[in-house]
Amino acid sequence: SAVISQKPSRDICQRGTSLTIQCQVDSQVTMMFWYRQQPGQSLTLIATANQGSEATYESGFVIDKFPISRPNLTFSTLTVSNLSPEDSSIYLCSGKDNPYEQYFGPGTRLTVT
Amino acid sequence: AQSVTQLDSQVPVFEEAPVELRCNYSSSVSVYLFWYVQYPNQGLQLLLKYLSGSTLVKGINGFEAEFNKSQTSFHLRKPSVHISDTAEYFCAVSESHDMRFGAGTRLTVKP
Image (tube, rainbow over the protein chains, first blue to last red):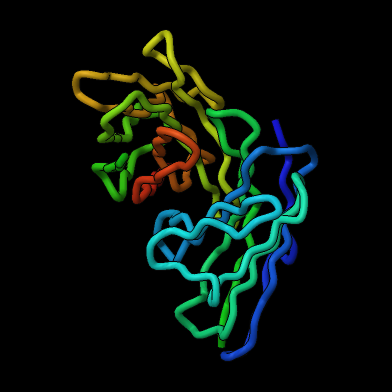
């Protein structure tokens, strides 16, 4: 199984700024994903992070708001741009090295003031 | 496209009582099914998974789940819960590369 870490674990940001979240996997994974968990809600898939190419976004999420990079098989970043209070959520990274199971990071708790 | 319905948003139960958390899914193809647990202020931890084979799946912390294809269900059970089982539980389904989650069930174990 893969172990996933995220930085920062939490942050408080001002409206209009941006936050970049880093996701590091301890082994190579074929696929990486970013999820959002709004307060008291389930997880919603934001995008699939593709190595060396543009991420694949789910309906309702756009690259200008959530730019994603994945320079190699063990690392990805998610930026949440032009922050508003509605962006206050937990953002989770996950990785997959087989068709069956996803491993999740501990999440980044973002509060926008 | 696959989807998941968790039938109970909250389940209160007394310590040492049995519990069942219900999950139904819809999919047009074969699926893989999962239960995750999320403790307060933590990420998701895999409890168990169904990929194929035996329909009764045993997981960590004494949990088990049964895959029922005819009823498209994957209910999670534990014969005797502890205070430490208080958490949010998510059922998830995967057809291909991505995973879809249910809305979650908040299990509260009372002394």
